[in-house]
Image 1 (tube, rainbow, N blue to C red):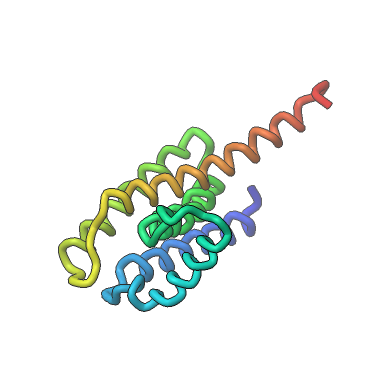
Image 2: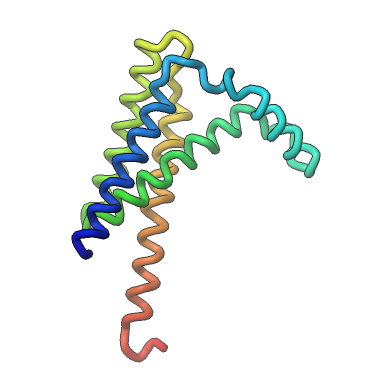
Amino acid sequence: MERHRRALIGWALVAVIVLAAVLTLSPLPLQDLASTAIDRVLDVLHSWGVPPRVDRHVLELGANIVMFVPLGLLAALLLPRRRWWVALVGALLASVAVEAVQSAALPHRFGSLRDVLGNTLGAAIGIGLVAARRAAEDRADRPGDG
């Protein structure tokens, strides 16, 4: 990978990590601040026929997954294939650390195993997207397959 592209991806990864840290380690209860918006989204989803069991907890899990997809994707772009596991383990450890800090030091936040699972799943999806793209590129590059 060319140096400029690698640096750009590295800076994007740093930005994603900083944004995730701000969102997850803020002492403010962000879900309370966004309560009206969350209620509106749920109202719209339910009016479209989404079942009522899709609630705040489901949206929060979805947000945790989505937040970590770019982290896994960008890390996988920077790492060689044989080291993608490092991105997944790193996301898992970062998520455990965030949840521990939330439980121990942030009175309006609480740690959750569900959040750890959602964050790790998001990173795995990001890594999977890179893996799928590279597999498709490899198939396209093989002579005689087209």
